[in-house]
Length: 286
Image 1 (cartoon, rainbow, N blue to C red):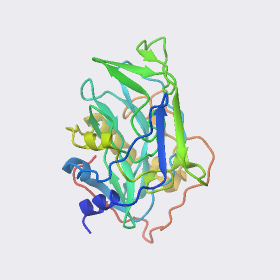
Image 2: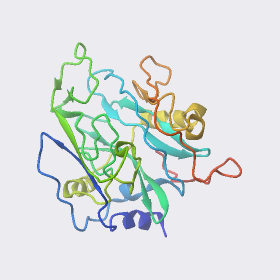
Image 3: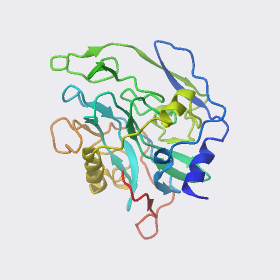
Image 4: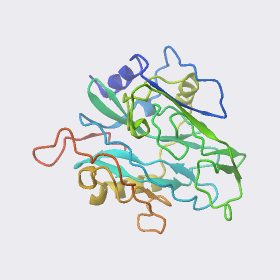
């Protein structure tokens, strides 16, 4: 089965347990019965493996470093030594008006595929995964554009209001419609309990928008994480000592935050015999 056909098979599965969010209680989303095919840049997958990603670590968000920066949540990526953590960080968008859609893992046919994040005028599908920091499963509740100025929601975003003045406060309520699911907010791939395998009509529309890839500093941030042994999931057992940074690629800057303790230690389900897990990557990283 090809990489793209695996991706398409994800969206014809029955709807999984729904995890959604509402901001000041809008009506629940209605799901498209037959989402349109995703554009090529969205269908492409960077990594694929038979090993499920570790649960998402819990960590504190560093404060906004300066006006206009947007939060990009941390995510597990796949490398020569298995999974490694790419810390959440604040990033300057490529241009005003753009928002970040996080990359996500999804299971299809027993294979875990990673679909890269992108910039666009609206936040698209990322499978109902609760990344935190305003990314509670669909959309982004951490801030909004007002013309060329970005306003931050202090209800969910770490803002020093002495330095950042474009703020508002809007309560975000997570409605998790899941039965007998524990620790649902830490699931890290689509297909796990609490996630969803179909787009909303709004997300399908975003899939047809023009997407802007990760910036050069985001790519540098990922490549630094890839070569840092501390961020390897087997070594840190799913609790990376650098879980978030105040700016992209600022791994040694003041304000770096570690993962919080708690939860079971991560151990791969299929430890490689030679210490080098099988890896398959799209040549166009990130």
